[in-house]
Amino acid sequence: MKPITSVLIIFVNFYFYKSLAMSKNHTIPQTIIRAQTIYTDFGFLKDRGKVLFITPKCVIVGIGEMPFMLLGTPQFSIENLPPNIKKNADDIKMLVLQSTFSTEPYLKDKVCKIPSWVTFFKNAKYIKLNHVDLTQLSDLANLVVEHLVLINVKYTGDDKVIAAIKKLQYLKYIAYDGSLSITLINAIKLQNPKVILLPESEYYERRLQENL
Image (tube, rainbow, N blue to C red; front, top):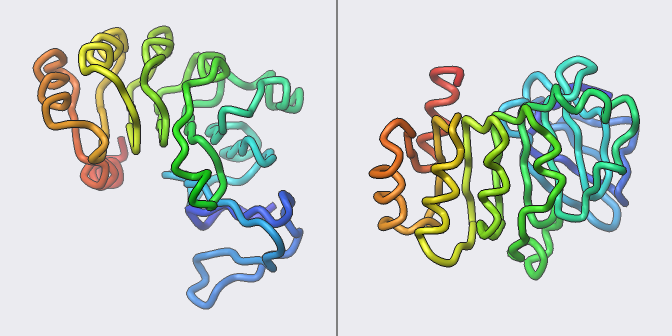
């Protein structure tokens, strides 16, 4: 399979066609689209990773043949992974949890809970939560999370979120969007002076510039 050159994964009837035609600007791989198309973000691996495993519930992106990034929905299960990837789960450093890969408006804005499979990846340093309820954010306490990206999240009560974040002892950066209130952002800064909080766009610019 060709290396990833786009931030979009395109499913065609939940399968890839083997041949991809490059777009006119030679940066976005395209294929014939039939039936349902689903999108998700490859993040910073778009220029150097390749898809190792793909289903409608999970995508594994690797550097070379080793898994490095998992993008999953709540419906994903560890049992879905092929043995060769499962045994190398400790190599996965980036997790992206989103409620769905669907572009259907009535599905893509749905908020999900943090599933138990997230805690299986003990060496994940980057976790992005997209359309996720933060009620169970404290479940991440035993992970080595350094980068936490919170997009379109939902929460009830600032105190619970603040308490959960204080348990992330390795945390260095939080990226956020408008779903976090200014009050909560300021409270997190006050309680966690060593953690850098940045709006999502500024965070990504900083990552690119400083190779975080």
